Length: 110
Image (cartoon, rainbow, N blue to C red; front, top):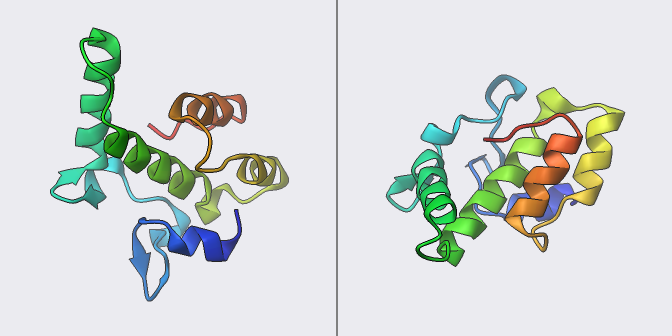
């Protein structure tokens, strides 16, 4: 994903660029999609997946996918190994596949 594509995603920004205080991604509880934090959305997603009573809300899944992309692009993780992950990850992947890929590269976004 290019820097321009990253800037188009609904992720935290400052002056049009992705926001990474001190090079780190913001914590899940600090990022809001509407009136809910990523942390709230993650908990709801887990409840849906674990209980299997209902399918996870597609809007929630997309919000979580954007957070994963935001997380792996944090400057603090800049190295060749992480660049491979950045090159492979995209918002067309399922959330499950994104998380699996992150874990393969030693990153746990949640």
